[in-house]
Image (cartoon, rainbow, N blue to C red; front, side, top):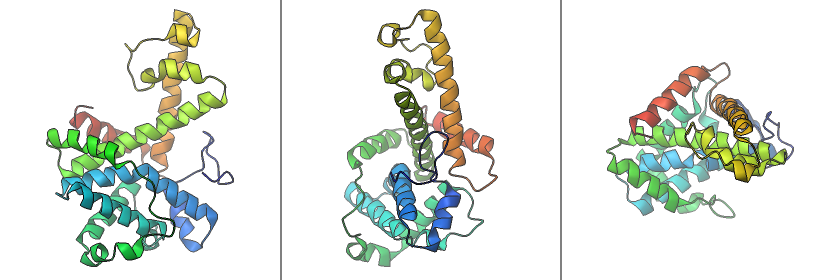
Length: 244
């Protein structure tokens, strides 16, 4: 990531929806970094949707890569309006239009960006999709579930980076599962070098930091003044619907 981008309190460059929209104005390094970070963060929900629409694996891979090639050239965000709303809603609608566009499908090779596609791990995304398909998820439900998982992963990565920066990587590794609410997860006193009481305190602090990081990650995907609590409820419902 580009080191001189605006920093969040977690030490990560901001990739807020508002920043991405504002980046339409010019060909800046900040804009390119923000868009590439966004692609890396949110491509898996779009892949799940494409597979749910019945596209074969290879075709779904091509369409998602193709879609983000367009995004990296800002053709997607050039069409974004100030009242575009939630980032997840905007991206899903844009992908739906993209999949319906026969010209886009025919012109995939022409849109391949200089230097190639963004590197994506489609094998892991395919495994996630297979589990969703087995559960009978609709395309939209698969997208919502993977969107929620992507935000959880972002929040956890932010917390991990904070612990690493504080020289507490071992503590995070020992208590990582508790960040996601696994109260009965192994406490890991030996690995973390803590007593049982100190471990409970550390686990509580980790969960608090995770909740804060998740709120920040969600806020980054909403328009200014968006309802973070409502979005968190929607994400929780998406995870619970598939038995996450």
